[in-house]
Length: 255
Length: 257
Image 1: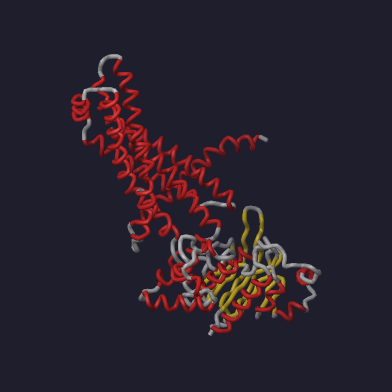
Image 2: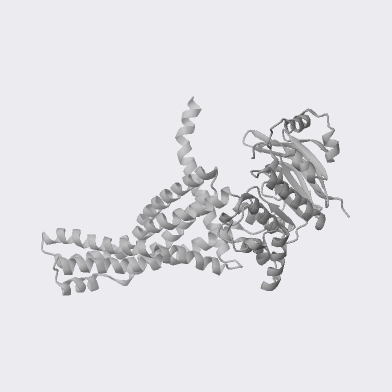
């Protein structure tokens, strides 16, 4: 069995004259939590969007479970996408639907299930994120942290193999951030799937990561376990680690 | 320097052509997807309610008052050579051939087109459109096709209402207020108004429905740059739709009538 869920080879992407990804090489291991750390505006989101085919690279390859996805047509790409779940930065819940409808939406569209089965699965997922009591609420009535939890329930509802997280703790206060991180860790240990997380919050991510990749100037400059990264002598990694040790530092800007 | 001048001269027509190409492509994509399963009927009905039923009040008001003012203005002119009996015919012809479809479309653009652009724009900047794509669902199928189909179906319906109320408005002003002979008023309408006048007007309305929904959805769908971008997209959607409706009105009229 293949050990890598996602394998990225020499990925390049520019927007106009600006190089955003400049030769990314990365292997994401199966059933592990891999965190990609980088500065705001450093191309983390762009990298994540490539993994699910929202963006096409200028050159390079992306292998997902043994399929190269950068040259697939929409139909085949959609088959690959069905094995993914994604939690967006602002959760991206559909405003026109309530919590229950949001979480059940992917099931309804892709599986032919009875209403009863859908209800069972959705309620289980909502219970898992602790929001069963809120299933009738509209997204506009929820706080940022609750939206992310609903987003997580929606990302998990189709039992995807790979789940992508775009800045799961940005714009949240430190306490809520921790509960989200613990929830991610807990869900992953409960159902072993491949998680890819991008964030700038290096300390928070050490709580959940099996592997950490440091992204800087469009390249992966370091890759290893949290312990290895913590001991790293690399200048940029050091800079990141030290920034979090300044007294009174509260977590940095989001974006 | 020279290049800069050259570029600024050609920039506008180039952008225009590019935009036209993109919108046409979106139209073709929507047309193709409208005939492919799954037919999202519940989505279409929801949009028909939004575009049709909820635009009713504006259409009723604009239709009635346009007919009324037409009667008022034309009777002023016709009185000068004693042809007041023709007021009814003029109101009926102007409403069915021209003002019914055009004013209805412009009102729906302002009411529903703007909200299509704003809603899709917000969905774009809050990544809801990406969320659909990630779920392996085609956003054009789920978001744009229902709106275009609903506009295409509802605009003629709204236009019929506008036509009818315009004529009724003209009747009230002409016959009841200005004292034009009722028999002459109705008789002239009957003699001059042919069925093609009405249904060519409805064809125009259906085309305008497609124009305003495709342009508004296109502008919303490709919104960039946060709340400001949504505002810009909405304005552009209304302006571009209205202008295109008026231009294509001329073209359609010269072809059909």
